[in-house]
Length: 404
Image 1 (spheres, rainbow, N blue to C red):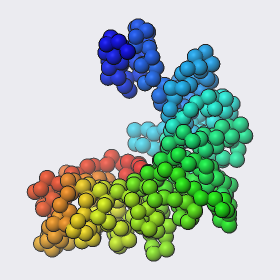
Image 2 (image 1 turned 90 degrees about the vertical axis):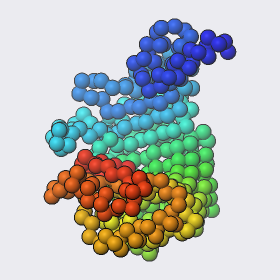
Image 3 (image 1 turned 45 degrees about the horizontal axis):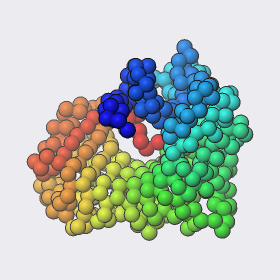
Image 4 (image 1 turned 135 degrees about the vertical axis):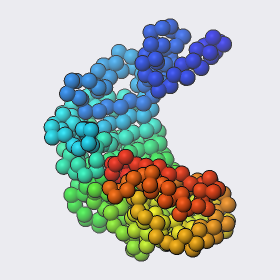
């Protein structure tokens, strides 16, 4: 490769994410074309067509691949958004959402032709709307057979490294698990907003078959959905490589809940980054505060109780570097002396802790400024060590983000 080409590539690499500039580079000189195309086509997203017809059209993209077949080899990440939520200034859902519905996926046959041309490493089929929009969940059985075959082939592809599956109605637990049963190379898996038409679990996982993916990242959420996380507790599924685990459920963890079991070292022994939706502080003792945990992220309603409980539970040799709490602006009630004493004692065990981030949704009876002043005074030992970071969340949607 010539020095001139290396410099051209560096220039183009600096424009990553700037679609308009990358397109201009393609027209400027041949030297820029190949590198610009790599950035332009590495990730492709299809969304429901807007009322004015704008957006990335699968049919137009398919025609581009027919005219320039080499472009198909550049696509590594495909994202299909089945439904887009539209909000006014008050974040309320507009009355007319006809053109946002997921029917566009089933009405076009182009996706079934396009997907087999790609050698994907990442695929996402997701919703861009609140989880409560359950009436727009897509029925997997009503997707045209050719498209279902194309998608299941991608899920089973040896080159696939990550998959995100959200907002579907599935006939049974067995059908859900069969989608990924051959994905041996999968490193990252995210499943949420799944609705099961039948809860018969007699054959939820293929008999005499083990699944040993290379999963290092796993996200399971049955918020605004049917419970399915317990399916991953099957002894024939190997989760021993998972280092990043995020779980969310409407149900309380409890001694027998799947949420409690899946976060235990006996199921996922290598977890270093744990995020768990655990609204009630009384359930915090079920969290395994192992010595190799590097980051912990909780959704919890009682932030003060959660902090005190967690700081008591970590071992002396803890490697925790970051603690994040999502919640509401509730008042601090514990005696300041006993609170700071408990936190000081915990900090002795948390020698590597670099940040405690608290992200809150402001309640109507206070302001973020007022609450943050109270929080800094109540958590003085964290504030004095520059460990405390307070962030205001604009609305309930942001509070729920990442958990649904």
